[in-house]
Image (cartoon, rainbow, N blue to C red):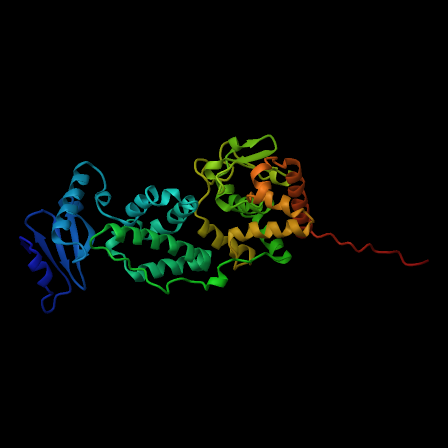
Amino acid sequence: MRLMLTDRFCSRVKLREGEVQADYYDEAVSGLALRVGQKKSWTLHYGGRDSRKRLTFGTYPTLGLAAARTKALEAKQEIEAGRSPIKAVDTFKSIAEDWLTRDGANLRSKDKRKSALERLVYDVIGDRPIADIKRSEIVRLLDQIEDNQGPVMADWTLATVRKIMNWHASRSDDFNSPIVRGMSRTKPKERARKRVLSDEELRKVWKAAEASGVFGRLIRFILLTATRRNEAAMMKRSEVKGEDWIIPAERYKTKLDHLIPLSAATQRLLEGDSLIFTTDGETSISGFSKFKAEFDKASGVTGYTIHDLRRSSRSLMSRAGVNSDIAERCLGHVMGGVRGTYDRYEYRDEKLRAFEVLASLIDRIVNPKDNIVPMRAAQ
């Protein structure tokens, strides 16, 4: 039905007996319709007769009639310019990117939050109008993350989504965040992970990694360098200087260049002319959730995250007798106090010895030698 929509009509219209849903097209803005069903939502119909498309971009009364007409006109301008009309709608992704540019820009964790959004959130709710996202959708998203990356990562993602939605609510006349208390997946004392692989688990993981292509090579590299997943995955050949790998400040957590002397075992894992870990030769490896799920089946080891490999490597360093300060420097942790302020020595040689010792211990665990020497019987 086509008519001149009014706020009075929008607020009062209901489904007639026997109807499941009904569309009421606005005469003021062609293509704009109020779809009445279990809820009232705004839709924009566009395209030719054979390629008709529909964009849903808000619910009534959260998005009023005047605002819906404005959004529809902006979307039509995008269509006429040959662009996607989604750009004219307040999608979760567009709001998140605004937040990252404005309030999120000064956070130390900005890069980590951006990465989590790109890896875990945008594919699920990124193109959804933020006003239409339901609490149940957030719950399903968190379930998925908890199942694949663990409850700590689910809570980290929830905290980021909450910040974005609260930020948008503070700038909007109509939006209310669907996130409420009680949606977190861990108890406070459980949030600090302590998972370290046992020798038997390490053996299984390493053996599976040897037969798992690029992802398996990345797993072994992380164990040998105690690096974070993205730092290793995005490694470039240009960052390797001789036997040293220098992770540039712009993609390192501390925002400082980090020097990692490469052990002989680590150097044998370096492949590629430009990107070290790539599946297509053009972009760094990604899609870790899928890779990890398949890898867990192959190794038979579950219940750990890729970041737990870094913690396992740090524990192995202590077990191998590496000085605690040197081990912390190997992991790129900033030293506190006077040492952190005035001691700029890179400890390159000490770190190299630590990484060689780590590689040697891993080799002994993965390839145990029989220390029992058979003795000849007395003649």
